[in-house]
Image (cartoon, rainbow, N blue to C red; front, top):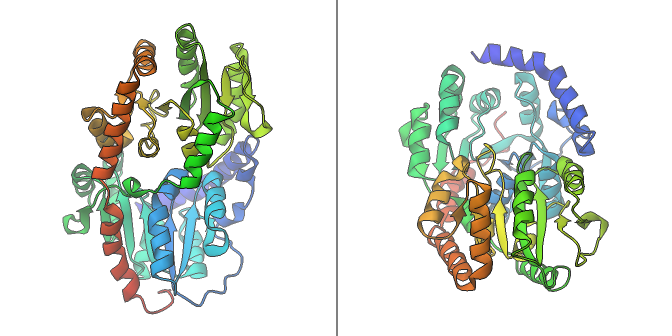
Length: 429
């Protein structure tokens, strides 16, 4: 099965590269460093063990930050390599760590391409975030005795069914994994159901609960609220996707007679959609201020477009209420823990299947509101606007939920550390 998968992947490469070029019209970074995706990297001169983290996008990288930082501090005689798939994640890695780490794009999952990658960097351990399964890459690591650990692993029911439909491909990949650190017992059961060996799958909790809130970020958010957003009641639409902004802006229009000082802040999930969202707002006759252009928020401003990256936590802190996107359309939602940690009331839509356990627990504890329709969203917004005590209780409930679930980083480090300590050579090529 892996032979046919590899053959299809090879045949698809021209299409994949053409898609990168096409995406480059909206996000030019997609046209850069494409050689890395084919396994061609600058010559490396590494004489110490390499601990390799793969974080596909910004969300996974942010979740991995505590683990990466711990490895840099605890294993200072090793190098840390971080691979990503998206340019936004790549930019975030460079912004946070700079030259402290090695960073390249993950190569495409073709046998000779992944072999070049492994020969170049010679990692002693592969740490993969959440649920990435790459048959050829994992097989190549297994042949070279490079341990693979999946951390913060999650698997929705929908994803489990997808993997089961290609079991001939996914089961051998799962057999190459040394340990899977699942977020919940349900995730553990699903990984076992799709072919992981039960003794290799541990339920250790979600490391996103252990993310830290930078005080400088908090101060920047509070400053933004006091200055640029002064006298405005701020509703942030965070990590939104195509098909969401239009519905949410209709709700905002309905709310303006009630919340007369309402300001909508939109932070689209993908930077290539920034201009699309700006044009959508303009088409609805809304007055838009654009963050990257340094626009001021005037009394007549309806929308503030946050067309920058890496500032979401700061924007959450400057808001009075947050809607977390990817949940009005069937994307499956996004991380709501960040919003809870910076103490902003949380709304989300009906599609939270990628974070179902967290969503269910927050709802059960009164730490969030789920709204499936425009009417429900309008009602929730009015209630939050009019009842400060209710807002504070929601925030406290969500924050307590986060605190009650911390500790996964320590448990995960206890799994990772022995693999690193047992590798007293530079790679296993």
